[in-house]
Length: 238
Ligand SMILES: C[S@@+](CC[C@H](N)C(=O)[O-])C[C@H]1O[C@@H](n2cnc3c(N)ncnc32)[C@H](O)[C@@H]1O
Image (tube, rainbow, N blue to C red; front, side, top):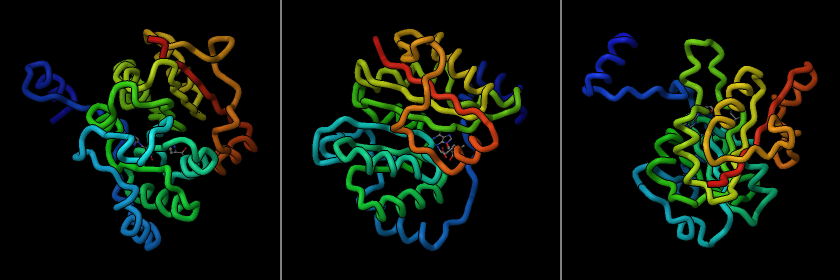
């Protein structure tokens, strides 16, 4: 069905079209990733089918909870979870090899404060996370979808941030980072136009790179090549 036919069908109420922020790649698992999934999924894996999470039960304690969307191979997520053992971390990623890689890193770091989903974050947020449950949501380097006709696939959209906001506690923070200037501008426009958020940047633009966001190899390389990175932090005020 063509795009316009799908939209027509949706308008007729026959078909709800979902524009997803990812294309599922069938990447192969390395042996190490497969083994880590086998070993650690029973203790660290969460499934969408489990439905609404009881965080106290999942982590065996009550602690501030950080949710990362689209963690890739999990490098930053594992580094942050290792640096903040007093917090709970939940990662969501659709790419299975990435989930396996993250579990490998988490095992090496000996983490007990991390749980992961292999699922679409839009659905996990909607169905599994209780209102007010999160202290921080972070989205680092989401797929920029460079072409204009693909911009609708970008994760950061008005409807998405409006659905995400109630999942944060009041005062909770959404932290975004991108190395694509046009996406940074898009993020700033979406967040500045959304109700009940406060921009934590003094000049209402971008914040200086926060020290708690680990510097990845990818970003280091970008720095050497003179590429920019833009961080945004907004707190929930309503
Ligand atoms: C460009 S990568 C960045 C990965 C990582 N954050 C980093 O900084 O290296 C974006 C990641 O987001 C994941 N992703 C995109 N949309 C998603 C969604 N709706 N739910 C979960 N993961 C998603 C992709 O599979 C991909 O691994």
